Amino acid sequence: MANKRDIVIIGAGPAGLSLAIALADAGFGVTVVEKLPQTVLADPPGDGREIALTHRAVDILQSLGMWQAFPASDVSPIREARVIDGKSPHFLGFDTRGTGQTELGYLVPNNVIRKAAFAGASSRPQVEIISDVSVSDVSTTSDMAEVRLADGRVLTAPLMVAADSRFSNARRRMGIGADMRDFGRTVIVCRLSHELPHEGIAYECFHYGRTLAVLPLDGLMSSAVITLSADQADTMLQMPEDEFSRLVSEQFESRLGAMQLVGKRHSYPLVAVYAQRFVAHRFALLGDAAVGMHPVTAHGFNCGLYGVESLTRVVRGARASSRDIGSLSVLSRYQSEHRRATRPIYLGTNVLVSLFTDDDMPARFVRTAVLRLANRLPPLKAGITRQLTGRT
Image (cartoon, rainbow, N blue to C red):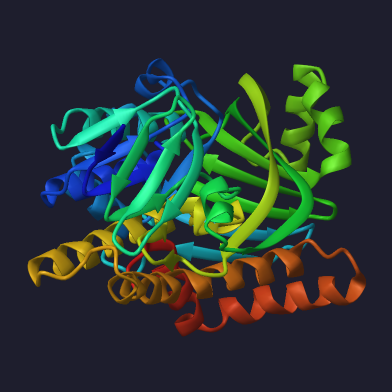
């Protein structure tokens, strides 16, 4: 039996649910389909990931009512950021001077964002969430998009949006390719307590063969993001807690004193994705299904929220002018806007990663030169700071 709505969203991650909230507030009827059970959506477990949010992203979250739902203890300000290359005494620093802000951005646990997104979406009567069922097929016709569920149900709508991860099955079924870059690396994320205050400073340390980010959380606590070769990850994941803590502290050169692992270590394969198209007739990609970022510049969910804002504005404008919200001419405006917002960040991030993870001597020389040059060019630093804060 077919069930028709204005828009069907595949994927109830933070991006998909944020879009559902935005569309519901704009007066659209939305159905969200998710393979995870509702109990997990309502109270997602911690996964070790801390999401960095720009000021623009915070503005969007406030408009959706999600920011207000975050517990104050789970919102950690970033007041300064430093990029360090190996043992070099030089670092590239960014702060809030000249920005009119007191913070560069904020860190919020991923599960806290997911919980607020589900609560916001499920509280809106215009949003229907179908959980614990997978999508078996998707297709479009001249006048309708169709989503077939594994339990036999068929959902139809003028527009279908896929927000089902960077390995999107819906994207593939719609014949849209993606440029993928497998870095052959694994990211290990965890929390560590430490002796000295972090002063709200986020560090990105590019050591030879391994990258360490240390992100400031509430109190004497930080999040560590360790990027290393995939064949070394299991050894570090299985390392005794005290040995692991000591290794991270030593790699961080004891800037925060002795460190101690708190809770579990989580690991994720490192693959960046950029869809070759963001739209087709009656179909749009959102979140990681459109742009899956390397975490080094912390723009992943921010890009997803920018897409939420852009897509909602485009379909709301189309409806106001009595245009078909699923037509390619309408959706192409979203594609154009979102590519302009994300393509430079995506390419720039990959160049940065390539430069700072190449251990050959010429690359080391270039890295040192880049750090020194950037520190001496205030306009360049100001431009990067605007990207970090989302105030472009």
